[in-house]
Length: 66
Image (cartoon, rainbow, N blue to C red; front, side):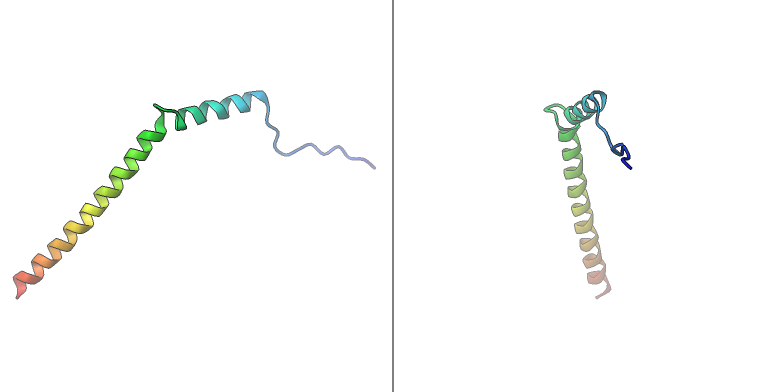
């Protein structure tokens, strides 16, 4: 008994076009890739500065108590 098993995921021409367009938008030279990278970098620097300010604030409070 031969059963025809249809593949679960098939990629047609329309899906390939959509994947290429999304890749160009995200990874393109003027795309979101650079903007997202800069956003993540800026967020990391902001968190680092915030932690540093918290530590300096704690040290200042400890000195006032002495």
